[in-house]
Amino acid sequence: MPKPEVDYSLYLVTDSTPAILGNADICEVVEAALKGGVTCVQYRDKTSDTGVLVTTARKLHQITKKYNVPLLVNDRVDVALAIGCEGVHIGQDDLDLPTARRILGEDAIIGVTVSNLLEVEAAAKGGADYLGIGTVFATPTKENTKSIIGIEGLQEILLMIAAEGWPVKTVCIGGINASNVSQVVWQSNGKGKSLDGVAVVSAIMAARDPEAASKELAELVKSPPAFAKAAVTPRQQSRSPKELLSTVPYIIKAVDYQKPLSHNMTNLVVQNFAANVALSVGASPIMANYGEEAKDLASLGAALVINMGTITPEGLANYLKALKAYNDAGQPVVYDPVGAGATAVRRSATRTILGGGYADVIKGNQSEILSCIPGGPIIQQRGVDGGASDTSLSDLALATRELARIRRCVVVMTGKTDLVTAGGAVYAIANGHEYLGMVTGTGCCLGTTISAMVAAHPLDKLAATVTGVLLYDIAAEIAAERADVRGPGSFVPAFLDELYNTRVAAVKGSVDAWLKRANVSVVSLN
Image (cartoon, rainbow, N blue to C red; front, side):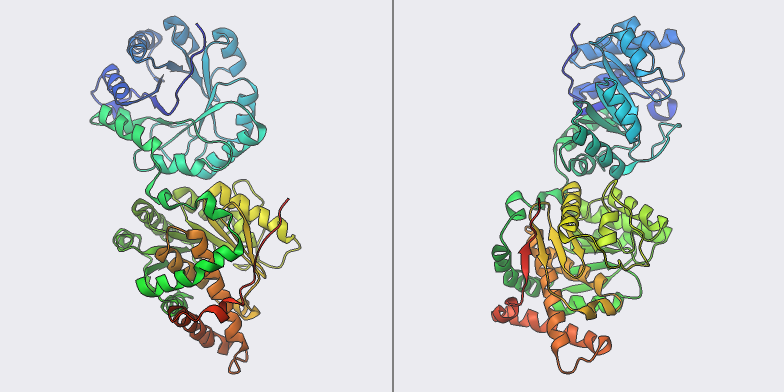
């Protein structure tokens, strides 16, 4: 029979163990799932003898054929041949792909489990019809999990497939359920290659109502998550500097009028300074590092700042709780991966946070931003501050844009010239003053400022972010020029004054003189 066109969007992998299936009948569960919208079924049973496997697989195939859905058998090519189903799925420790293809023929569907780039290359070049990528999240259904790759590992694999132009289909597996499926599908679809489906085990097989669970998952696969509904549009990504600057007074006024809540999860060193910066720009600050509070705060329209200044296991767990709460509410998140390139612990924490949810804005210095790129260069930092670099501005802009496209967010790379992009034009902002680099916490407090802007103007987060950077940088310039400022110590109170003065001027409609200082251009990229 000719190889069928397969819809992999909701791929069910069965599990017959009592811990998952309980006392339910596997055939009844699978039929209910098919009624609910499952589009592909894999029969997986690692413990039963061959006779039971053949009998059960034959019953399942009769059911899947009624719904015009393919049945694949996990590992056992002999069982697939015995019942004449559409194909098999093989793992890295099962029968090899070339042998499976020779036995089953060119018309059979053969999927292969992969978890790293070498396995992807071998399977794609070897003629696999689809790849089962994982394990994405921790799961109790597989004991031989080689590694948890997270969303970042999933993105790396999809990027490689896109770069090589391989036509292979992809599904991801491992801990996929109703709470994360929309996030996984949306976040993994960053650049050139998107998932063709998600593979689900216990979320359906262990469900009290498999049909209802399947219906919900089928809808969620097609629906963007709450946080994606206000993503930066293609039109917004490529405006001229003049167009962006025209929005600045309005956004500053919006913050003053709304007084949005800026929820900062940050280190003790900068909490007081960050709170005063938030007040100066017109926001209402709250310093709350306990993740359980996040749901209530997000419901108040807050924006979250996750500042990775102090990393502990408890702190990381609280970050993830807060991130999920804000993502579920569709409220903005600003992530500052402080020192992400400094240590293995911080690099791991960065992967965990970016894999645990979505950040609307990622803000960091050169090394921190480069450390956030899946599979990108890891540059060793000295402490939390990125040092000077010989890398050209255009190369840094390309890297910044790459991260924005992969993560589908706004990215700010700070430095002598700040870079801001949402994946289209990369804007260079050549404002600021060297005193900002001489005072602890000024980088952290830029995140606080941006959070106020995106909370007040969430439908244009790129313009809001540019506004935050300009407000911050130009206030620093004006403060440094004051006669009463003689160094970093006297700069701090003057800086807070000028953040406040600029906001007041914007409200009064007299921001033009301040805005004339703005030095914004578009970086020319090849």
